[in-house]
Image 1 (spheres, helix red, strand yellow):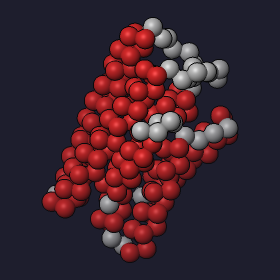
Image 2: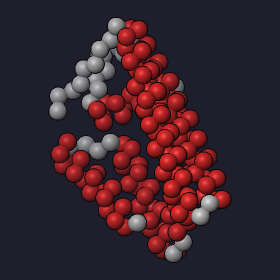
Image 3: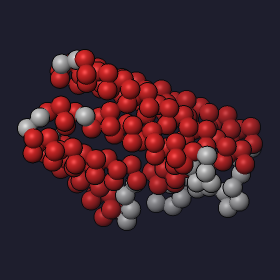
Length: 168
């Protein structure tokens, strides 16, 4: 647990040193993991540490859903932070609708993951939980990324837009 926690904080520190900023999701993950690790070590209960998997996904669901209908959907911010995808100076309505829809998609993915992981945590052994939750998480994240990428491509083509990334 401590090694995993150290890796997350080292990753955040390296990112801060190299680029001057840290993605919001990394900060959220680091804080949640720190709290869960402290509680698990303090109580000696492994299930408390494992609880961060469904709890974290539920928190992400809420965070994504909160921003989905607004003027600055989380997917748009993450595209700017993580891959330096620049938005047009004047927001394009079609692209903005995509970012809102994609934010709702990811809120739904994280809700589904939270439900699956909570059920697994309640019904499976630790070894089974870790294996099945890893497979479920990877499968849903890969599927969500593929759907998002294809959807973005369709939106860009439909509106005659192209990619422009910020300078490194």
